Image (cartoon, rainbow, N blue to C red; front, top):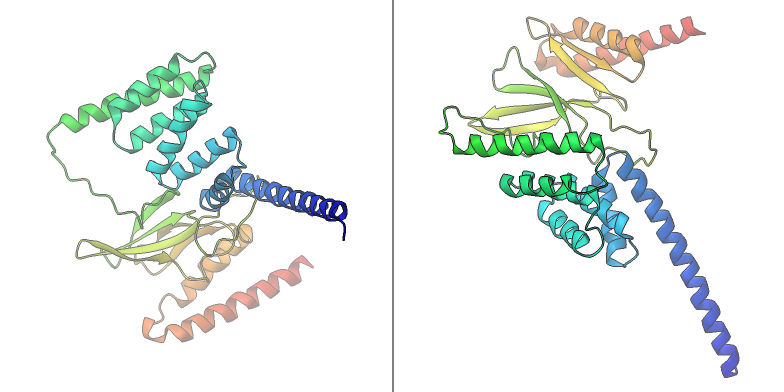
Length: 298
């Protein structure tokens, strides 16, 4: 084979590889941006990290990576990335400057955060809405500094990183029958949550439980699959005896909500030793009622 033919073949191979590589990067970027827009930062940051190492991220996407690092509690990494951006590319970018202030706040460096927010107010591109938001952040920094200087009069203790995550934990409810048992709702991203790049997608809320035993939070996890569906499931409260749980589900709307309350009313008095029989009864009644509802709809 002549040298000219080999050269042409090498050139064609390079062009094909470059085209495939570019298409792969485009697909990954689209996927990462989809995760980013719907708040699945854990999934987005992995892709941004991969593309950042290959040198294919624009300054705007590098900023997105730093936001993901911040939202997933990788504060030091987020700080180093956004500082480099401000130093080289984004000296007047309001999003980068604001993020750096939030990073300082998350690190407990309230004096530095206040100074950073004040610098942001001098940038011409700050909108009135952002200006108002920045002023509120400066006030929060001032309050934090004052509180840090006061003598502790109360004990405030966090439930820990396994209970308080970067996601939303709302509506805590203490068990009626067990003082050390607590329930709450969370839209945390977990291994069971499927990735979704649809901008309209929202991480579903599920019901979780945890226990406080010997000053340690333990037994943290979602309630069983009879309660948590693929849609939103929000625990509301218990009855006065603690034998009936009231909750709202987004699986089949109000109908499913009342069906499930009915099932738990029927089986609430069954001794937990016979939990297998209770489970079987609940499932049989549930499917029977669903069939009846389907017949009525038809």
